[in-house]
Amino acid sequence: MTWDYLLTAFIVCVSPGIGVVFTLSSTLGGGLRAGFWAAIGCTVASVVHLIVAMAGLAAVLHTSAVLFQAIKFAGVLYLLWMAWAVLNDRGGLSVGPAAPQSARRIVWRGALLNLLNPKLPLFFVAFLPQFLEPGAGTRALMELGFGFSVVTFVTFLGYAFVAAGGRNALLASETAMAWMRRAFAASFAALGLKLALARA
Image (spheres, rainbow, N blue to C red):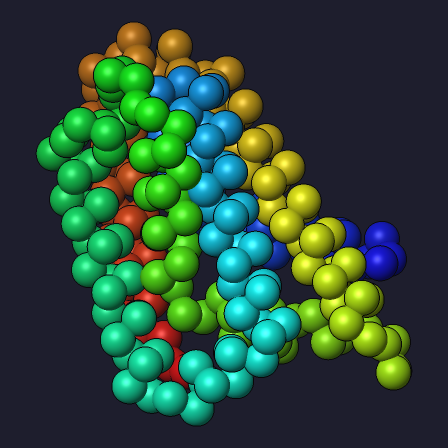
């Protein structure tokens, strides 16, 4: 595993996406603790997708249009539901102060949100081989997967720390919170639209 690989993985993870938005909204709603568990959930999903990719199932997903479409639209519907829930300040998806949620519930939501993105295993199939030496075996592939998972968690945790640092100032302003809810709702809706337009 090279520094070039780790830097590339960091750039991929730091780019705003489903996991980033979920981690930020969870932190603003429940504080650093919630952000930590959100990062765990998103990382768990990445690990599962990595395992799927390394097992060769991504190739099956790529060749099965029906399976791809089914997973994709389940993800789209979930993202749109999250957009609606954030916009209406509903319970666990409230961007404002919320009642503490169990770690299990936060992890489950973060994992489910990312598991319903069928592009991830396809991404790994295209991404990982670029950093493998000719003739490299399963162990090298597992090392790359482990490295990506660690970078994912550290990056999302970094986002959680940033959000937690500015949380009190944001919560003190009703105007800022209203715009924050709209921004997160729009982000989830935009990610849902992006996923809806994705092709295998």
